[in-house]
Image (cartoon, rainbow, N blue to C red; front, side, top):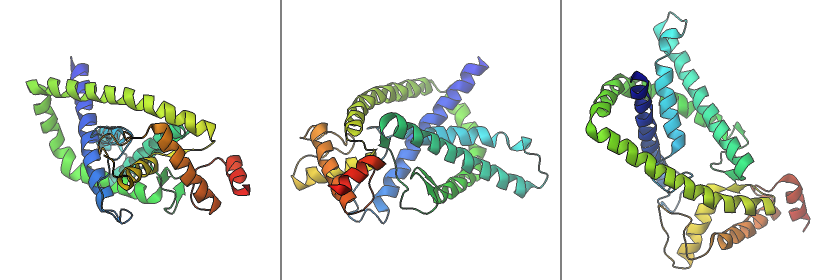
Length: 262
C-alpha cells in the first residue's frame, strides 16, 4: 500500500510540474525580447497545457531534496550549494537526453539554444543550467517545505484520483496524436536530410495563417487550412533560403553543401 501511495505522490508531482512548467513557458515566451510581436505561443511538444520535461524536472527536484542528508558535508550552506549544483546537473542531463532522443529518433529539435554561448548542439547551454540551479534553490526554500503537507492532503482527497485519471488520460491521448503527427514530420525530414526545429515550424505555420487571414489555433498549433505536408514544404523553402545566405539551419552537412552549391 505504501508503494502505491508513493507512486501516486510522484504522479501528482509530475502532473503539477508539467502544468506549472507550461504556464511559466507561456509567459516567458510572450515577454522575451525575441518575441517582438508579443504574440502568445503554445510551448512544447504536445497540444495540451503541459510540458512533461518540467514534470520530470519537478519529480527529480523532489527526490534530490530528500537526499540532502546523505551529502557528506558538515557546513549547512555549502551542503545546500552542492545540492543545487546536483539539481542543475540532473535537470541539464534530463534536457540533454530528451533533446538527443528527439533529434536521433524523430529528426526534431524541440528547443534551440544555438544562438546562446556555451551550448552543446543547441539542446543544452550554460545559461539554462544556471537557471536550473536557481530554480532548484527556489524549489528547496519555498516549495519543498510545504510540499509534503500539500501532497498528503491531495492524496487523501477523493478528487485526487479523478484528477490523476483525467490528467493522464488526456496526456496519453495527446501523446498518441502527437506521435502520429511527428511520424509525418520525421518522414519529410529524412527525405530532405534535415532536422526540423519544432518551434520554428509552429511559428512558420502561424505566420502563414496570419498572412492569409486564416484561423490559427493556439492549442493545436499544427492544424491549419493547409495540410502538414504543404506547411513542411513552405518550411523547407525557407530553410533553403537561410542556408544559401549562410544563416542558422538544420540541414545535415552533406545536404547543406549541396544546397549551397545550387
